Length: 323
Image (cartoon, rainbow, N blue to C red):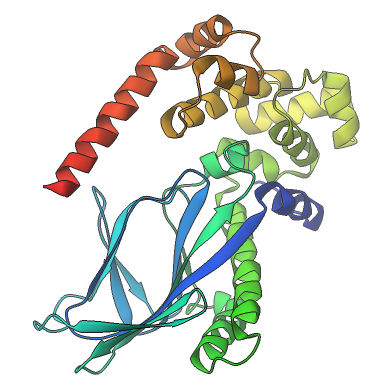
C-alpha cells in the first residue's frame, strides 16, 4: 500500500501548481436554467461549488453528472461544459438578472423561487504547461463535502465562502478567494491521497522515498539529472531509490524521467501551438528529430501526426457545437 502523503510532499507540490482562484459568479437560480461554458486556455480550470440545492453537469461525451449541495467540482483541463437545472425542475425557462460587484457577477432568476446556489470560477495553474502534475490530473474531480468524514474538515470552508458572498462587505471577495484557494489545495491533497495506489506519477508523489526526486524532475525536466543527484535529493541510497521506483512504476528513475519528458511533450502537442523544435528543447531533447524518434517508440506515432489529429478533433468538436 502507498504511504500517506507527507506535509513536506504537499508543500513541495503546492508552489509547483501555483493555483490562483478567480471568483466569477454567484448564481441563485430556479426554473429551467442552463449555463454554458466555453473551453478555457491551457493551464486554466473551471470549478463549481454547490452551496445549496442540486445541479447537473453536462460535458460532451460523458453524460450527465448530478451535483448535490456541498459538492465541489473541478475540471482541471478547462473543458467546455454546461451546468443546468436538474430534470423536472420546471418547464418555464427562467430569466436571469446580472449585477456586478467589481469583477464578481451576481446572477439571480427572476419570477421564480431560486432552488440552487452555486459559486463558480476558474483556477489559473500558473506553472502549466510545464507542470506534469496538471497533465496527470483526470478530466473531472468531485469532492463530496457533504459526506463524512469530509464534512467536518471541508464544510467550514464552503460555509465561509458562502457567508462572505451572501452578505458582501468590504474585503468579502478577497476573503472568499483565499478560502477557495485553501479549499482547492485540500481538494488536490484528497485526490492525490486517494489516487496514490493507482496512478504512476501521483503514486510516486505519495511515497516518501520517491516524492522529492519526482518533484525535482517535474520542476526541471530539461536538466540532465544523474542518479546520484536524485538519490541525494531523496535522502536515499541509489539502490534504495531505484528499488522504490521499480516497485511503484516498474522503471528506474532515469527511465521515468524520459517517460515524463515524453508525457509533457504529448500534453504540449495537444494543447500548445509552439513549434516542434521549441517543444523538443523545452522538454529536454536536443532536436526535433530526437524527440520524434523517442515519441514514435513510446506512442507509435510521430509528434506531427498527433498534433494534426488533435487539431482535426478540435475542429470537429467546434463544428458540432456550432451546429
